[in-house]
Image 1 (cartoon, one colour):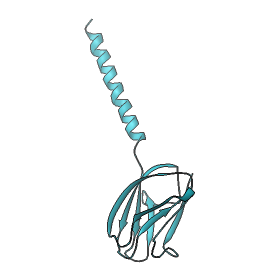
Image 2 (cartoon, helix red, strand yellow):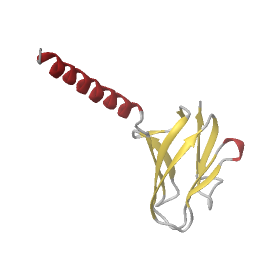
Image 3 (cartoon, rainbow, N blue to C red):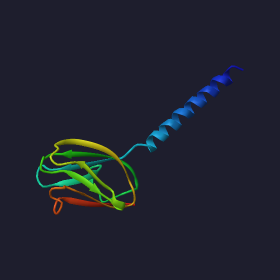
Image 4 (cartoon, rainbow, N blue to C red):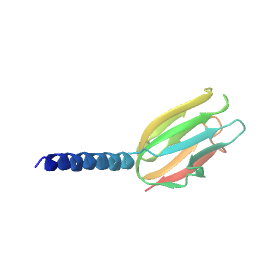
Length: 122
């Protein structure tokens, strides 16, 4: 008769571990990597590929600002605007943002006319 409580404990413990592992996998926040400089370049990548389209949701955005003459800003739908790495900062900035459906533009505030990129969120 003592086997059943031990077996029940093992089943419950195993189930708890599986549920915790599954929810941790689902809640992982994707990381977008952006750069500006050192020359007149700006980018945003996910897994090493240029971002063109994303699913709506929460993203960690890591910006590597390599020049004091440049910055990294993001504009989006419904008046969304965020200066993630302002001029003249040099270094790394990290933010977590919830991106909603719409069109987005990332750009250098000092050179917006030619240092920019665009992507959509669906």
